[in-house]
Length: 285
Image 1: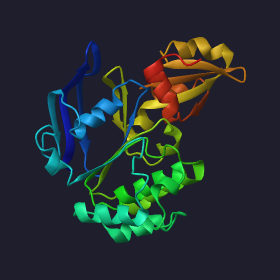
Image 2: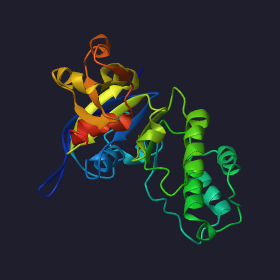
Image 3: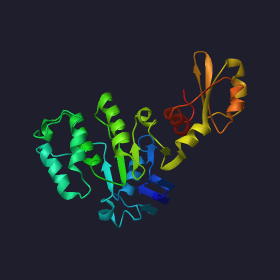
C-alpha cells in the first residue's frame, strides 16, 4: 500500500502562535482518515499545507510532490471541499456543471447528475435561488464527480440537516470511496463519521496526540463502569478520565488489558468523542 501524504517536522507559525509544531504523520492509499481537533488546534493549517495553500517549515510530500512547488500538478489529483461552499449567486446549476467539465479532465457529468438526482436541485436554478443546504449539495456533487486520488473534506456537511448529512456519508462510502482513493475529513460531528473511518488522528495545540488505525483504537481503549467500592482500584490503573454515571464511576483506559478491567466492572467500547475528550481535554466532568 503506497503512502500518499508524508509529513516530517511539519511546522507553521502565525506570529507568536505555533499552529503546527514539528508534526510527523503518514496517510496511506485507500484510507478514510478523520482529522479531529478543537478550534485552533491546527487542523485547517495542516489541510492548507497539504493543498499547497500556505507555506510551511519541514518536509511534506503529497502524491510525490512538494505542495509549495507543484500545486498545479497536485490539483489534477486532489479535490477539496471547504467548510463554506462559495459559488457565484448568478451562476445557474447547468452552467456550473459545464464549467467544471471544461476545466477539469477528471470530471464526470454522468456522476454529477447521479448525485444531483437525489436532491431537489433543478439545473435551470441559479445559485442565489438555492437554500444554504442545497448550495452545499451542489458543491458536493461537483467535487465528488471528479476522479481524484485524494479528497479533502473540511466540515463538508456544514449547513445540511441530519437527513442530508446521513445521505452524504452513505454516498461517500458507497459511491465514491474505493481502494485507490483516500479521504481526509475534519468535522465537529465526530459521532456521524466514526463508523466510516479507517484511521483516526487527533491534533491539539499544533501537535498530533493520536495517530492510529480504527482497529488499533478499538484494541487500545476501553471504558469500564465500576461500582463505587471498586473506584479506588480502578484509579490505581491510571485511567485517562473518570465520571459518574447513575451512581457508578465510568473510567476510560488506554493500553490496559480487558481481562484485568473485566474484574472491576462492566466493559464498554468508548466512542471517538469520549476518547477525544480524554486525550485532548483531560478529565471529563
